[in-house]
Length: 630
Image 1 (cartoon, rainbow, N blue to C red):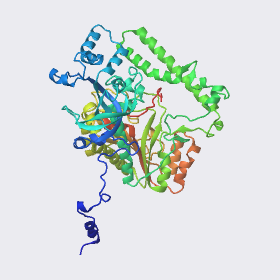
Image 2: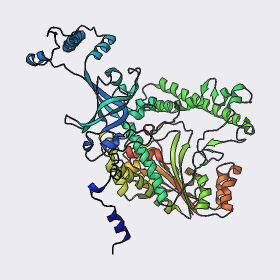
Image 3: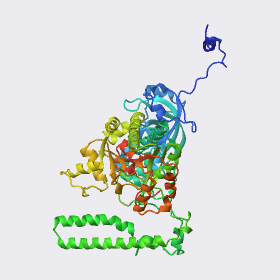
Image 4: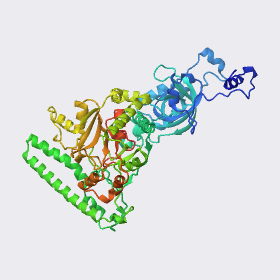
């Protein structure tokens, strides 16, 4: 006996001649459109296995920005005399041709003479262009993929002048047709209507009118640079990594928790923090005992600018000492460096005194507040109630030194796990890193092809290496011993136990010595935050850093101190304000648990996945020392 499902399926089958028109299934759209704009996304067309050839003849609407263009003037074809004579109107002689016809037939020769004698005029050129039939070939991109779509616009549909300039926004209705010439373009759109035209008013001033601008030149035009193919690909890869992050944690039982951006706690104990205050107006108006001009300024000289010049002056003195060619210049440079150090000391003392004089009870939060450096302390409170949690957001450090791997505002992925120790945190961190690399390779095919061609030819191989690697685990003491044995390179810092590993040292370990991702663990307690769990030797702590070749440290993590006596002692040793951490100590007083976690620098993962060398070029709107234009 047939099942109920089988009966239903059989009853639904009818011969075509038995179905009424109302019963005929209505075919769905062959090309899906955007739900909220009714246009077709270019990736939908160009991402098909056939490159869109199966859609030839379909009428669609597409929108995007002109990347490049070319105008092709149509040459009027004079029919043979035997064929043209019957087509003349009654009473019209062959000689009675119009001025327009004469003009069109002589345009190429006319333009040649104009160019030779330098007589081209924009107004005349515009007028002549309207009289001459032409096709404008546009390369249009809507940001959905790296590839452009070719659009043909006849001059009868729209005049060429407004649409030919790079950056012009167009919304076009037209028919898909196969591209007539061989090449990378499989299909093109024959425009029938221009539904929207966003012109470039002064194309000479449009920064992207120049081809192949370097990335560093685009930083001053952050609002335009997403229109470049490179930055667009980086942004799509960044989006994919964002999605992959949540995918990893959601699939591994973590809860997503939003932590505050403003905090009263110095999360690490020794970081440079941004103050959040509303006292500035009072300082500027003289209502406070501290004036704005005196808070970080001395006789009109900025403390930050003096600090920024200190490194340059130090290098100058070292160079003069090495050459020993001009003793007078060397002595003058040393004296200048001495005065600079004295001035910095004066300004710092003045600044500290002024901070003491500030009455934070009058401030917005009635206390000192900062932009958060890390959200791990706040995450701990949720881990101690919910188990495994994670957060994803911006973190801030008011550092003045320049680096290609760090800016003032960076996005961090942070995780905390209850009932976990150092080994579990390291395993989770490395699994997350591999997951992100694998996700990019598998889900960003088109953009990775572009990056592979234009940015870094080894990028995919490097990501595959991270995916398949067993990360080398190296204790800090061993790393120092290995660096001490290096003879072929002179490091900026004297290598000895107890120093923080600089970017130079970390890069050398990963790039030149181990030549693979490494995990350095068991650091001296002096170089790690106060909350990291102390090891039994009393000198080192249960902290780790994941270092990747070409990028450096991408993850920092630790097992956190759950013993309240040890944690309280550490807070006092670092001279931190104990009342600020009472809430944090409460987590140890009331139901303490062993726990561990880590912070992953999301911006550096984008750097790793794209092969870009400067982190400012992978952040949509970077904030660095002296730069916050948007």
